Length: 88
Image 1 (tube, rainbow, N blue to C red):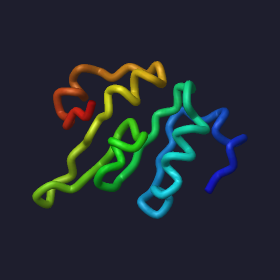
Image 2 (image 1 turned 135 degrees about the vertical axis):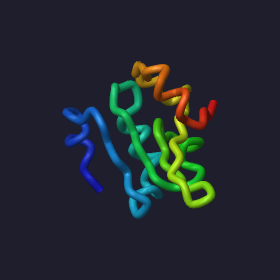
Image 3 (image 1 turned 90 degrees about the horizontal axis):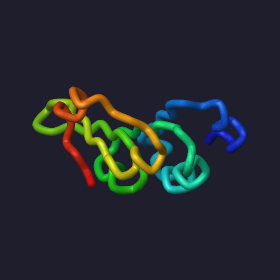
Image 4 (image 1 turned 90 degrees about the vertical axis):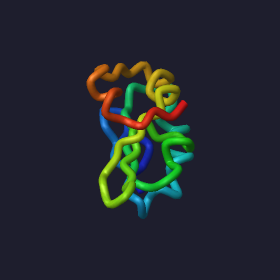
């Protein structure tokens, strides 16, 4: 796992499935910063991720947790929201 000091210049942080156990800690360390957290495992949009990629019926889908995005003072284009599964 990357050390917290490396998050300061980060705008997008991809957290792989292997590192997903660290999501809560990473979300806390980056709380209040405009860092977009992206994950790739079922359920992580509910656990701190902003964008989460999942597979549904052999198709890649995007989940967006609007609350997590808004807490980080980030904005999402409406076109992207139209394509995603929205998590609140």
